[in-house]
Length: 190
Image (cartoon, rainbow, N blue to C red):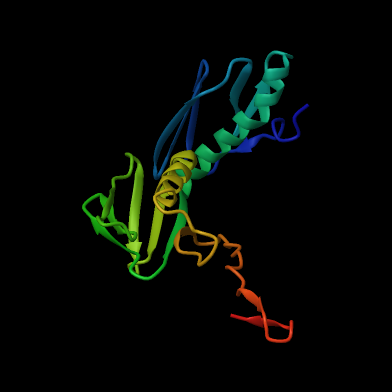
């Protein structure tokens, strides 16, 4: 039994959930999302709740039961409140500016890097070093933020690059000073 999968999902006011076959559609104030459930998983709308069940007793159905319940819960959260990820640019000369739907990033390369988000994702720029990725699809928001971060991931020596706002960069120590042998065999720094 899945501890997460057997919990019912409450449907908030203003959200409509419909199930037809293996497809779940969620419509709310911010938009509409749909997802096809995995084989062996079934969802039903009972009263003001969505109940997800594992139809077959196969190992894969039991494994995917809790996952599909969480995906439906994220769809409901997305159409009511949405999701967002904050990114920060760290480094001298690293900056971002909005260009139409996309953004233009100066990341220490010889050219600016242009990034256009997928449909359903909004990019907002504040303070020339902060980017906010927002949308109703949690997976798409996270994937877009990861793609932007991968343009210049933070390096471990100075921490320069694009990082998540809540990410902590563990810095490595640089090279230690070279030690030589002095006049009387005592070590001295060169």
